[in-house]
Amino acid sequence: MSRRLVIAVAVLFLSTTAFAQKQGDLRGTLYTTNPSGGVGVGLAYWVAAQLSIELSTAVEQHSATRIVVFDGDLARVENFDYSSNPVDFLVQYHVPTATINRWKPYLGVGARYVKRPDESPDTETNAAISPELNGGVFYHLQPRLALRFDLRQLVRGDTPPYDDSTKFAFGVVWRF
Image (tube, rainbow, N blue to C red):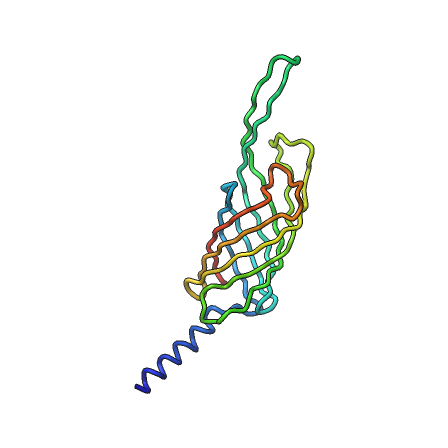
């Protein structure tokens, strides 16, 4: 009986440290975004046990339709497919949970920069820098491997058409 107790305590002790973040951790993410159907990569560095900074970028697909009128009578509809490359910088607070718990929620704030794509029909906006809010959760499969579910919301209401104001992302995370 005491041998089982020692094994149970040892397993509990080892598992509590296995999923914990610590200062100096570096993690990479490969993710897909919705609604644009883009793909991206991110790199996060833990500056403290509950605080990280992240830099990420993506290639996101967009479609647009424009009606061109000739001489007031004749109109033509043009369809555009183009891509954009937003860059996000985020500071994220990782909510302390029981270290045995594989679910690790986080909240973040940051900024997104996106340049108007050359082939975009929007000619009014060259580039946009927008503040953003971020939240999500990591689910650790193993100490070095996790799944990530993420939501990003731009704070400004006048986002350009080539940058969705709300983005959902799903990714795979690797701790180096």
